[in-house]
Length: 68
Image (cartoon, rainbow, N blue to C red; front, side):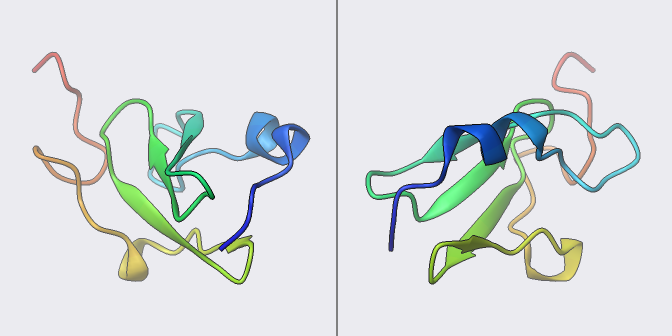
């Protein structure tokens, strides 16, 4: 586990069709989370794995609007 570069976090987005920004979770970072649907993506050896197949869906599912 490691801390992600803040510049990298600024350019990463959820790979679902809405492409919302992500935020880091844990310290050191062990996951990044979509700010829209709360889908969680693992960080392995300091590298974010931004694959929907490896993601843990948020409470309403991948890409879901939290306001719906």
